[in-house]
Image (cartoon, rainbow, N blue to C red; front, side, top):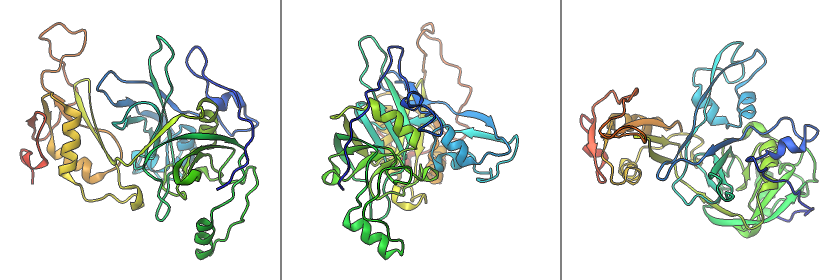
Length: 362
């Protein structure tokens, strides 16, 4: 797809940390400022970031309004609030804003996108003596006949106010679906690419990370292979990402992380399944847990593992406790008091085990 190139903006991080470009650009261009989650990277070996928030809905709110306000995706807000009406939560209804994520186990550099997680993670290069941070946004990747390619690429162009010229197969797909689209979409608020686009080398340069004119679908798999963000999120990301930034796209529906003596498991439905959970592959899940545990000895609640894998709701959940974990700063021999313990039968696991080794498993 060809695009119109214009001079990019020169905004960036501040000495104090970061300024989201949406705030710099101002309300004249954006409906709201980006609420991207910005976290200090966990200590070596850790991969769980963030925390959930509890808020109360206003009478005029929908869950999708709240999802966009707090920069979470469609499925994320729905899974975190399964008993809440999507369109009419109601005045004073307690709403969970999901904010915990397990970062994929890949090198922490540039941009990392995990397709089943519907999440983009950006790792700015830290300045000297600064603590490394990670910034995360919900995204919409490709679906069906238009999957987002998995692999390593890089940003090769920054395109403000892009013109969209759909490829022949996109035009044909829309025509066959009875939804013909123009051969050229001018820049502007109705452009499906939004106001900002980052071109990659994938599919001969036709795969972009860009905005959208349909923010309600962010967090679902709905694109023709590109990766979409909320308009305010791409406006924040666009100025600070340089040409040449590496991009790693992975397909990891199962993530595990051992942090501060606690083992968490996060499982998502496959990207191509329209959010329908797949039958759990417990051998693969066991391998991923093994990799997260390393040489540590952990009491794992395998019944909880099975529950998390079967539900596949994308929410990180506690499934194990490290044996004799002692937090930094505690006197030697002092064990951590766990407030949340696995409540079902457990088994001690060192580096190698399988799901069939669970105590009391059926």
